[in-house]
Each structure stands twice: as structure tokens, then as C-alpha cells.
Amino acid sequence: MKLQFAIFIGVFIAIYGTVNYYIGLRGWQAFGRLIPDGYGKIYWFLFFLLAFSYLAGRLGERYLPAAVCDGFTIAGSYWLAAINYLFFTLIAVDLIRLADRWLGFLPEGLKQRPVAAGLAVVLLVVGIVIYGAWNSRNPQFRYYDIDIAKPAGSLSQLHVIMVSDIHLGKIVNNGRLMTLVNMINSKNPDLVLLPGDIIDENIGPFIEQKMPDVLRMLKPKYGTFAVFGNHEYIGGHAEEAFHHLQEAGITVLRDDYKKVDGSFYIVGRDESSGGRYNGKRRQELSALMEGVDHSLPVILLDHQPSHLEEGQEQGVDLQLSGHTHHGQLFPFNLITQRIFEEDWGYLRKGDFQIIVSCGFGTWGPPIRIGSTPEIVDITIHFNNVSEQPMYSLR
Image (tube, rainbow, N blue to C red; front, side, top):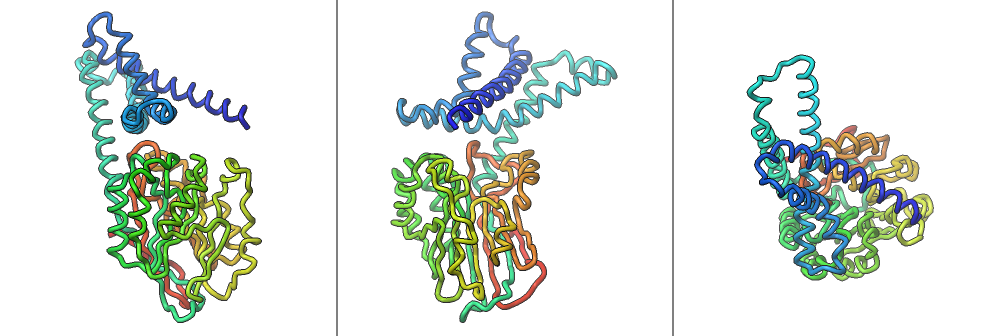
């Protein structure tokens, strides 16, 4: 396992370093004439300092002052978004230049102005990053209206708020958590469900900023339930996170279920990748649901929307998941669409239904391009049959 991880890190650094060198080289070709002679080494030093600042900030948390690490992490997180669009833009520019060698369609004046061309690329990417940063901080409600063809005690409907992938930490801080809580409370839901990645890898800011006190302000009628995602395990703080979330009034289900008000079940699966970090394999869904009365509605929380056939086979009525971020940055949504049967939105397979959220927060770059942070507002009607849900963004 350690060897595989070391190989992965080595390959990642090689690819990441090569991409950054390509961007840095194109930057030097465009702007190098503006840099005084003898300052080339300083250019490359500062460039690679920025390129690896995110890694430096995360790996240096135990050794460097907090302010230094925070500065590196924040600067580096924006750079992670910038290199994505710099790389694709520069590839496009190079392809145009290559085609021009054969076809000669570019004006001579343009080819003689590398600084202007370089500046245009920089301004384009800066504009994209600024928009993505603004977009990531402006969550919207996404509404679903669905039916479950089962009785639920005395309930005819249930109003649920679902929020996935909050990633509370340095980037999604206490102020943004307060915004989230206020938005949820404004809807006065019956139930709040959090399907994983509530806390980022580093639990320090979550504790230092007293975020459990803010989460305690959630007051849905039937309570707040959660499961863990991969990030609660990656940081090695799953047990500590469990303790703090329970103190905040959140019921964390780890391969467990609860019968709520005698009317419906909430089943919570532990994170599928958790065993890589704690050595414990999660239960099979069939074993977990042995005591569930399937005559009542069953809502499943599972962080990753994988192996949907399991929920369908075990009689789950509604699964709620996150994890994908819908790619977070275009064009990575094209990849998540290939990996997951449903990477964002709604899918129905017989009596089984799933809603996958693109999430509230961000991981890595605090940027969203091609996806909008969301709070999912679900109205569930019981003992009623419909082919498709009604859903909207407003």
C-alpha cells in the first residue's frame, strides 16, 4: 500500500511539474523580454513556489506558522484552478500557431506581439477564476418534488433539506457555515440530511472556529442526520469528527439506521473508502437493512453514488448522495459523468430513486465552473405514484 502510494505521488508530481513547466515556459516566452537580464532564476523560483504552494501549505502545517501555511494554501488553491484553464488555453493557442505554419492565416502584426497575446491569455484566465470564485460563494436552492408509493404513518408528505460536501475548514469557514444554516432555517424543514464530506481533511479550523456551535442552530422537526464521506477519513479524524458532530446535535449513522416518528427509516452507510484508512470494511447493505420494515419508506444516505443496483435490490425508496461535485471545474464534469451512472441530479429505476447533489462547498480550488453550489430542497409525497419528479432551480 505504501509503495503504491509512493508511486502515485511520484507520478502525480511528475505530471503536475511538467504541466507547470509548460505554463511557465510559455509565460517566459511571452513576458521574458520585460524581465531584466539576470532575473530569470528569480522568475522560475517564484513561479514554482506558487505552483507548489498548495502542497507546501498542506504538508507544512506541523512545521510552519499557521499564517504562513494559510497563505500558501489559499494562494495555491487558486493556482490549481488557474493552471487548469491556462493549460487548456495555451494548448489551444499552440494548436492555432501550428495550424498557422501550414495555412498562414494569422496577421503578421499579431505574431510579432507576444506580450499582447500573453496578456490576453492571462486576462481571460483571471476572469474565469474571478467568476468561479464568485460562483462558488453563491449557493442556490434546487427543488425536487417526488413521490414514494408507500404509507408513512400519519405523514402525507415530508420536507427535507439535503446538503452534501460542505467541506468545512479553512476555505468554507464559519461565516459561510452561518450563511448555510440561515438558508436552511429559512425553509423550516422537517428533516436535514448531510450525506458526507461535512468536514475537510483538517479538522483544526472546524474546532477552532467553534463550528459545532453554529451547526447546533439547526432545528428541524425530526432532527439532523449525517454520514461520513471520504474526507472525514482521509484526514484521520473520523472519530473526533463523530464526537463533535454528535455534540452539535447531529446523528451520525455509521452502518446504522433510525426509524423516525414511526413513519419512515433513515439508513446511513459508512463511507465506502473508509476501510483504506481504518482497516474496517463497511457492512453489506443487505445485512445493514435486515431489521428494516420495508412497508415503510426507506431513505438511504450513501456519500458516493456508486453501485446503485444495491439500493434498488434492497428496496431503498430514495437514496441521497454527493461526492462528485459534478466535476467542480469544467471540463472535469465530463469525467464524472463517465464514472458515475448519475453524477448530478435525479434518476429513477423502478421504485428506486436517487438524488445526487453537486454539493455546497469546494475541495482544492475554491472555484466552481460549470456547477453551482446548491442546497437541495425535497418535498416527498407518500402513498402516491408518479413517473417523474418535478424539480427546479429558483
